[in-house]
Image (tube, rainbow over all chains, first blue to last red; front, side):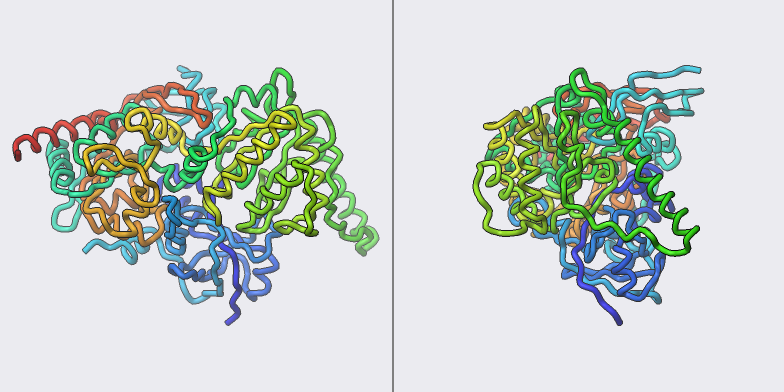
Length: 132
Length: 479
């Protein structure tokens, strides 16, 4: 299966801001943050198309997200995920003594995940943060 | 129809104070002047709010009386040896003040969201100092605006329009018209090209090479805007010039600018992926401006180098002040994150990550900051106010947060409130409750009450005061 080494960024988007005001459990919120923006050339090299699912793997975890053609391309080998519970699964908690984890510029691998589905908010909470 | 004017928008650090809200029968029906995010907040806040306190019993969150929820919260905080009190940036200064009193009473750690936002900027400002001003000064006077590692178009949608390039100041005029005509030119060129290609059935225009030369607008005396980022964001589209830096290389680029401004030679062809000649030209524009400003965002604080990136940015501004007038300002995220820092500082002496476990305030980010405490799994309970750490903390920190007793005070249902043991639905500050908040340039502004809250819904201040009262009552009983 084709894999690509990329640098991962997180950040705000207008859709994420509007989505969170619609409610964190709303469909709009999930649609706006359970996605990743990727350079069109990189999408081609993975042999997949927009709106198909990809898996992002870092040293800290993995997450399946819907692929969106980046509106801010070209930015080869840079993948952007809006802030949210999905992005948090692959972030680096190391603060280097500053209190601030590393949420941008994280080395990651990305691969097609056509068979896997994107977790809903409740499934994600159940899977990763279930209380004993 | 009653119109409430001069409303402050309780969303981002721009804290726009010119919003008009139309209210009919205690329901907000329309909003004027707000951005998409602000409008969504005012119009949709009531659609997903909870109104009853919840307490977890046998693994399920069930409705409870306010007194029961208050008692349960007080017990959790008293029984804990090292509780965390986190959030605070989306509530009023008045609530933060009570929160600090509660943190001191229970001997816990109190931290605000700047720990995962501009915490490194604060550390750097404490190290190096900062030359800053209010946004009003920049609106009237700044002729060179640099947005470094931030994307105001998405995170502070009205920042450019209200305070910088597209605002009409007394001495600096808006460049909005110039931008629209430039955009019109680009679009007509594209349309012409498409039409010619259709007629001739071949591509007669070769793809233009990306020019590294600075556009002519950068050398005019009017307002100019430069965006430095790792990708061409929408903010970069409205800028006069976009400088694309390689990820995690901002420090090199800032130091290269410092060398060029000191008239030193660089022995390399490129720095952080940018040719040195381009940097040289931009350095000339920086020196040539009358009043410049660097707005910086999480592109500097979250990447490699963290606070050292901010050290370099502030030092660059200090160097530039030998040649012209230059200022620097962090782009604060939540509408009252600056207020949280201010209230923390005036009450404890420190702006965030304050530890009361010894009975007096201690401050050592990296040790007393919540992410570190959670990753080391040292805490045994938490109170979260107006924040959603389960959604935004790295997985390991969030997992350690939810495994301990958790109290949430928030008007909305969030991933954090779904994981909590006690949930207080509070009123929306700035919509249902008044208060005070600080804009990103540390100007305090009032938050208005526009509509009546649902009955039995208390404000953050009242809920915190009742928890504090109960903690004192139970504490004295146990002694």
